[in-house]
Image (tube, rainbow, N blue to C red; front, side):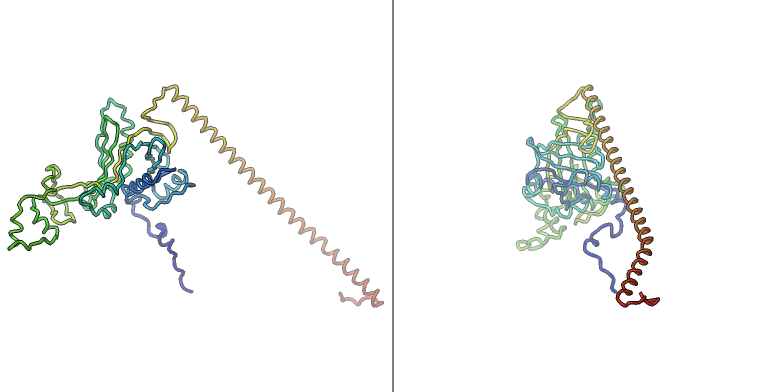
Length: 392
């Protein structure tokens, strides 16, 4: 017999193949979903935010209406998922919730403005081939989150920690600059309390080159029909390119490593250029909860409760938790009693079957003897003599 071939599902199952390396297992993974009726634009924003979270996110995750938050929390440990990003929409507008799986905390943001990635890219004069940029996680930059100690900074610290924890940490001594292709900026405005989220693609370009020289360095074939000599083409335009002339000198860096793009050599100066690839969001933190979309409200932007109200809410929460535990214990007790009754009925049934088999074996011999007597009597009436011994 030939060896049975593995099916397509078995081949695609990561558990059926070799295990992932430790650095991939320890990296933060995420679920990005939407709940309820949100409209086509918020659904597209959900897909765009999945691109930001690449590559450690469920890119092709299909969420059905019957799926609950407990479903995602129950599988988070098996799939090494640490964060949940959920988009919802109410009559007041769209919201974004960021939760730490499986037990919280949960941060709720109000989305004031957003722009989809396709709109950002279509507005660019020179679009970037950004499809290859999503093979590595982005570089996270937080700006404006360090506030004075006189303010209540607990929610600010939690928010900054949550944003940083959503992406893998970067080891500066071992990082490969060719893998730093994207940048994610969280800019906090202390006056408006709003956070601008911007997503950039990173390019590195050599500086100090003329337009003609830059074309040759990048491998482009120039049109030399109107020049007698290639030197005329190189000498004609000594000025820098338009994009390089607009560069801030502060963006010029000396490369410590070799970059895969042409013209960027080790120990030479190059300019770091950022191009928005979207999406763009302007959000504001309005609530922090201690659990997974539930629990104690640690911070609220609009509602401030007195200590008496907080104590009353905590008392109600404890009563609700005790009632839930009581119901759970009663349910476990009912299940245990039902199992005991089931075992008792099974035992009685087996005993009844055993007694019936014993009674049948005891009654079988007299019944056989009575049947033999009836046969002998019938033989005498029909034949007129006793049957011979040994004839049944």
